Image 1 (cartoon, helix red, strand yellow):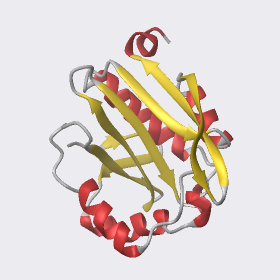
Image 2: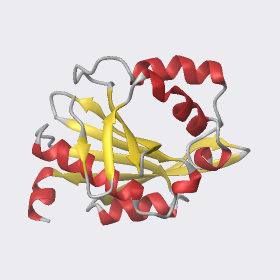
Image 3: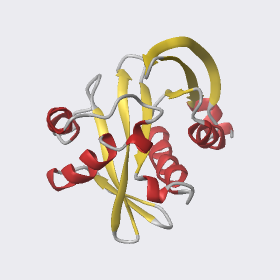
Image 4: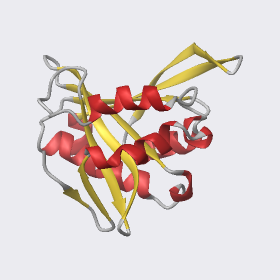
Length: 177
């Protein structure tokens, strides 16, 4: 797994020393407002081990990168192989709140999207986000994703039914775009 570089960012494989960042993300109400309930430290420990495991490009496994900006680790971005036979992957990203609205999530996601299509030969990228998360929807649209569907009342969070927006970007549209 190699590092990825943009004008402002270094994306490097997630490692054990990133645990506190991972915990800060998943235990932060602002970060989790469109994802689900904040996680306990025990759950973070359990899940984190899956994200730093050696990457073999197996179904269900995340290729996870730490996002470094101005010598600070500010978030994570990655790809999950959803279907090996269809070469379909899911894009995901999270940032600490103090780094919202700086274009970092878009820049990191763009680097990973480029890697998915140019290096991994991905056929289709998908992304799922809470339909209320306008910032994430804007990033996905800017990346060239199309909203392909809406899963109504997909899950209940804080007593409210939440709709999930489904996004997709096909390889042919990425290269034509």
